[in-house]
Length: 457
Image (tube, rainbow, N blue to C red; front, side, top):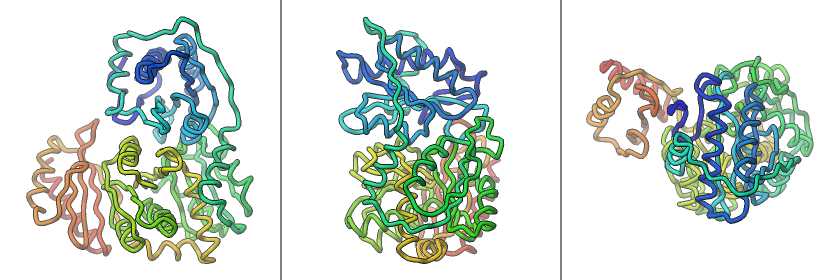
């Protein structure tokens, strides 16, 4: 088993050279061992199994299913589903744990596993700090726990429909007028929940790439790369639609396009959702990551919210939300998490809130978002460097007059601009994010910092 498939947040690798059926079989047995040990179960644990639309997912799910049944689990098989629907099934129906076969937004040749466990009433994503190291060690040693009796398979349907009903409930069944929405599902599992959602809403859904196809023939399933939005942008403009939406391959990320075809930064959507929540619940804590903060901080200042800035990675978002009792968390990667969804991602409440604001304000989305967009953000820049720590120390010294923190890498804040630089967990690369209150300053500072970084190549 290639140890490199165990990442910070999940398990992921190229199929079948780095991750194959036998690996999934052993990892799933190890996951079962972890669940039994963590929960102290004297009866067979109920474990949800789900998979995304990748070509290798059915075969890998078969091996995971076999491993769980042999181990003694009650396997709740919800079949082909988005990752948020999988999360919903675990927490809403009260099951003990779950594993999703998915490689999220990665290219078609990848696959992996996203394990979760329910401790108390809330989900815990199993990442490096919450059990993945233990699962890796047990899988490599092949020291598995097996109950006396084999488990059972229970097929369950309707989770996506129930997820939509839950989203309508937690957002207060918002009023939505008939709108034209273009959605690009990128041949991923977002097509499932989008179909269910728009059965409940007025207006018109214009579908792009809704056929689930793990070869991803339309484009890579990663809308965080703005070039992957081009088809959606063109369609929004040609259809004269009110907006466009784009989930990633397993639909735990979501990006928006306004009526002009402009890509909307995730921090602006976080600001919009946070502002709507704080109108009803002032004084609540709102979480967001260190990559881009100026838009959200401005909204929280205007609406009486308490900022919780956190490191990057959605398992860390879930854990800090629980610790701080955040009502909402928005990541710059397009993950949106709610306290009411057990501190895990659900894109449906976000869509409902955006549509309800357009309906209420009777304005184009671009006009609604304009006052929330106080920051100009450079796209993340990734630069190969042999010694990332030396670069970070040099930047810390040069910009020592700013407000410095080390929540994730190095962040330095000045009154009208800021940056974050952090080393990659897997390669000799630094990732740079720069933002400022005017575009010229942002470009100048980006160029200035990139020049410093390149001097260390």
